[in-house]
Every structure is written in structure tokens, then in C-alpha cells.
Image (tube, rainbow, N blue to C red; front, side):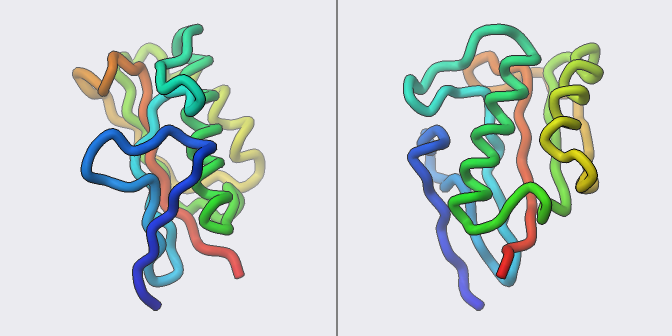
Length: 128
């Protein structure tokens, strides 16, 4: 099985030398997503809750474009600029992975692109 690039208009376009996702050897590897609205290219307003929801919607779009689903997610990495946001992020996150939680790491970082509060990347099995 070779390598395939995944792109969708339902998630923000890559703003550098990377792609939204890569399919390889039965897995999908996504680029990290921040809370950019794909229609405007701007960070959503509303703080950590709104940004986490937008991040997960962006990831969902990439995962679905690859022909998979969050039920097939095996690993996520969450980057937060403020670990005091963990509880709110976790509450939103839990609604997207009900009953099918992947392994996860959460890391505190100094900064994220465009002043984002949260970034999440994901690895999933490809369905089919």
C-alpha cells in the first residue's frame, strides 16, 4: 500500500509545505488542526470551547475525506497554550469520541499559530 494525500474544502487549507492528511499502510495521519473556520480562514471566536469544537470539526472533515471516522481513531495529541483549559477542552473532546476514545497525549506549549488556544492531531485506521 502506497502513500496518498488527503484534502478537503471542509477543513482549512494548508498554509505551508504540508497537507491536511496522509494515508499510508492502512493508517491516516492528520496535520495538526487549530480552530480556523475553513470558510473564512480566521480563528473562531468564543475561547477554548469554541476553538476545540472547530478543531474537532476540522479533524472530522479530514478523517471523513480519507474514508474513515472518529470510531477508527487510535491516537490523538492535544496541544494547549494554557493547561487550565484542560477541563473545558476535555468536555468538548469527550462528545466527539463517545465510547470510542483513542489513546491521547496532552501537552502544554508556549504558543500556537495565529494565537490559537488548542491544536489537535490524529492518527486513525482507514476503514474498509
